[in-house]
Image 1 (cartoon, rainbow, N blue to C red):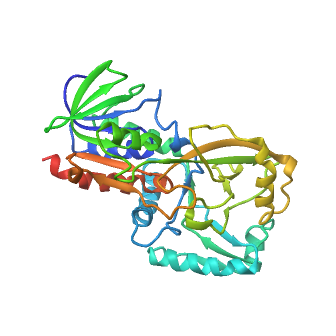
Image 2: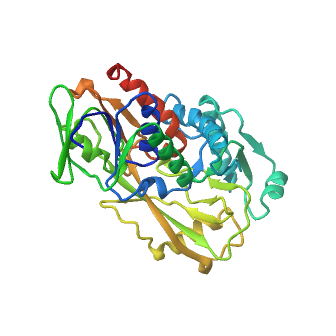
Image 3: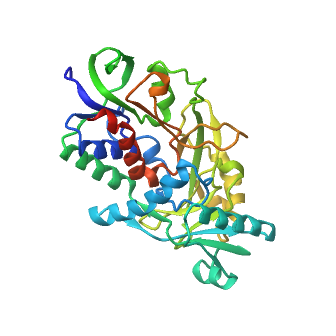
Length: 372
């Protein structure tokens, strides 16, 4: 690996894979490195696998624009490549009259973001669509769906490799140095070293550490990540639902509340909650059962506390800490900071999965000047 690469992408989550696939169409020497034994073993495989519509995000934000574009593109990509998915729709429910105003605010926000297909449901429609849902009002998003995220990542990997990209697992970047022409990268504590002209930091939970490794002051740039854990519970017997069911979101969109999600096999899972952590820990605390049951019981009948079992958890790489205001994606080419050809992707949480193809195009536009 001593030969120079034109582009190196750090991190083989869904976003890193999408970037590698996109750039390998026009670049002959693309390397994708991943410290784990395979692709998508962190945030990309520990989420609800939802294709979001772009409802919640502030107008003008990257999250809003990239999600809205990414939603349509992801459905098309799935159809073209035989990736399992279902456009099942999402019901956002008001469980008390005071929450109705929240639904009107969400519809207005969605329309400001260009999402124009949301409709209000009557009480009769709610009962007809989901008999066990308890709600006084609901907003329905028909363009929300679910996807086989592993199938998506596998497809992106095959396409990238088909374009000539090299993928290296068990390859952890441990030093980065800019020499005025490109970047020298040490791997696995100095096991070997290689050069790259363009460096894409798509390291997910570790993206701030990679930026710091390159020499950036992550506190000055406000790039330091906070780990926000989300746990899931499942129920046995599983409730019968045909749509995703969400409560109104929590303040500052730290999370979307403990909602009911479906996988492609029809299994229901509840979560995620929000819990800021100082380390990465994927265990699920069974003592959360009562809190989950209380949250679920506000909008869904028939789920008993003793039927809930710990399922899985994921960690959101958040830029905003507890009680801090909303933060957008950071997707930035860092010439102004003295690192030309270095692109940071930091705080790529939800809707990163939905937005992966549009994020990849955006990154391609940022590095285009360095590829000529």
